[in-house]
Length: 133
Image 1 (tube, rainbow, N blue to C red):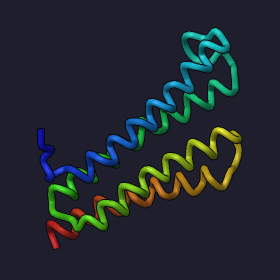
Image 2 (image 1 turned 135 degrees about the horizontal axis):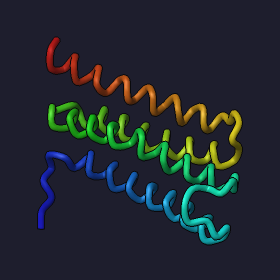
Image 3 (image 1 turned 180 degrees about the vertical axis):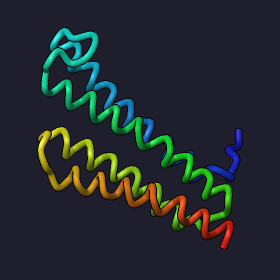
């Protein structure tokens, strides 16, 4: 079976991010079992953090992947698609690592958040410039 090359790069980063999402989800499930909490966090700080890390991922990653796919279909150079895809992936990994260590300020969390915001701003601007200017 051959895979269409049209979305091969988006497919790569979608796959890697799906694996990361499963890891984040397993962590939530592990903590729920450990602390015997089925709904919410029951005030367990580690579970609260794990839930927020997973939720934050689901809040930002879908839009980022949609924009990556739009840019790939629009014909953006592969180098830029990989730069954007890696930025999304590394941003989410750093955010999760930073928030896991502390609820307060952490450099990893700040870099991860900034990377996510930058790529979510640059990708649509890139599309608009490519398409309309």
